[in-house]
Length: 120
Image 1 (cartoon, rainbow, N blue to C red):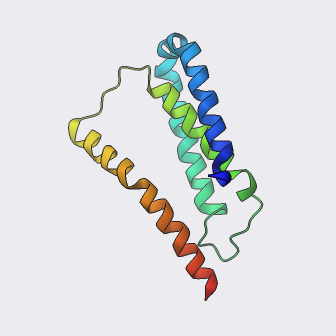
Image 2 (image 1 turned 180 degrees about the horizontal axis):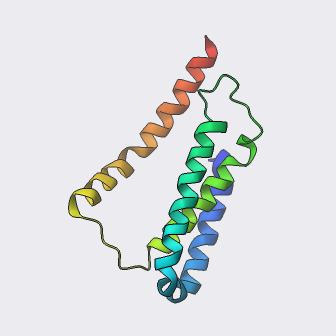
């Protein structure tokens, strides 16, 4: 948890800002949601290119700010999605829900694979 404390704080700040400005967000969701989605996708591409555990030199400078960038991107996406009227198809909602259920396990497995790789 300590390694993700910045993400926790950014999430709490996003929740506070969402609570205070959800009406304004709802009015601008049509513009802000696609922008937030682009930020998350670009951030993921950058992470895969510069901060992956599986790169030959996994301790790149980019990793210093990666968790903060990730948290800001996802906070933007979640806070712009929440007030909108966008509804997912039932099958996609179930798929996303299932992905959320197993995401922590995948995160823990990913970390374990990283440790095993560096022991060899």
